[in-house]
Length: 249
Image (cartoon, rainbow, N blue to C red):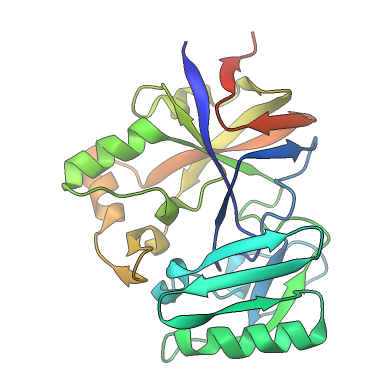
């Protein structure tokens, strides 16, 4: 097949920055460690114990400037560093009350006028993925290239907020994997469903400004607005960028 794992990304605070990792230890039934571990509940949120739907959190679909945040989380010190082209870098401890207050002060200038404002940084004891199960998103580099060629620009990778990027597949071949299981490094993942996309994917992550209508391009070109697939980890193990990817028969 010649498939391989090209990139690994995680997003410590849901919708507030991403970081690339050389490797990660996946755990059965869990998302990437510290992926969407925190989320920013807005002032109109109605939260229940455990997982909550994305409508309760501030996110790039409503506030494009958030898409330009980059993150670096140090697991040893439990400190998170965020950067944005319009702000000074911030380093803080997300589980510390003083750190949370500093983060809320830092992010408020990015918020869109008329939108519910950030109120608190929350955790749920699990990754707050867009799915009600702890998912790993798997995306296809050739699908990204195909869509970018159709639009006429380099879309980059960040706007899709994916976890694992695969290389060597044909464009949109990832949709044919639903129900199948993949071996990546020492781990296995079962592909569950397609990822429906929102307006956050329309934003250039270098600037935090909308630069292209990805949703219209998907709809007009392919009769859907899906990009990538969600998977469940079915076998614990370490994966590394460059690992081969195989279908488990």
